[in-house]
Amino acid sequence: MTPEEAYYYAKKYGPSDETREIACKDPRFAYNYALEVDKCPRDDTREAIYKDLFFIYYYAKNIDKCPREDTRKVACTNSHSTYLYALKIDKCPQKDTRKASCKKPEYAYLYAKNIDKKPHEDTRKTACKNLYYALYYARNIDKCPHEDTRKVACKSPEYAYSYAVEIDKCPRDDTRNAACKDSSFAYLYMRYIEKDFHEDTWKAVKNTEFEEKYNKFLNQIEKSKII
Image (cartoon, rainbow, N blue to C red; front, side):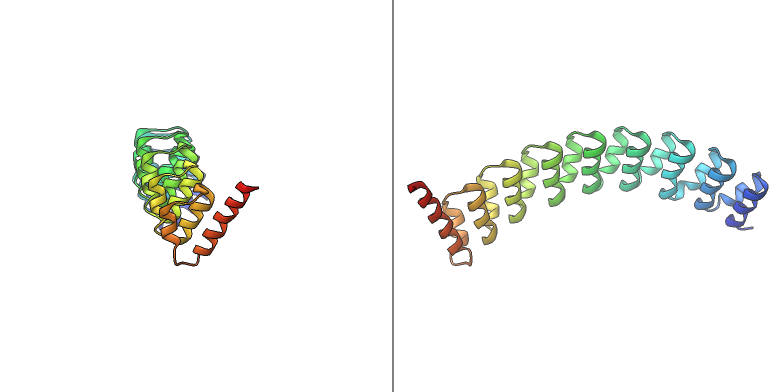
């Protein structure tokens, strides 16, 4: 008898140690057995689904209906399952789930946003391993400038410019220097952040397609001052 056959047999005729043992050889049917045949948690069906992180989350959610040290420990072997466990099962921060989520920038950011609901050194440190999540951490978690997130943003002209616009909301030497590695972002930096001439942005756009736009914008500023 296969695990599938054992599950359907038990579903029709009721639970037994024999069919349960066979069903427990496959995490999917161990889960279904617990949910639809036993209709309650048991150590054997729970242990059978340890091999599959998809079912460990659903076992905790739909059968145990509460957090447990053993299911959490298994969930914490993967950042995605850890995050879901913390969000839907624990429904609160835990040191072990935060640590496991921090194996990947995406889940470190999501953990900070939806579980901690505030900044934490661990989640920021991991988020800062990725340009996108470093910027979003500054924007949505810190909600203010931070040396670590800015340093990461400055590895890219685009993100340095975005950081200056959205987070710092003012010019700085480090974001300007980074933006000036690309003539388009040097021009945008001058126009929307500096809003004035600066030798670095000028050098970056000189002899490029943005030189004319740069001069035109500065001339408009001078005309408005006269008026």
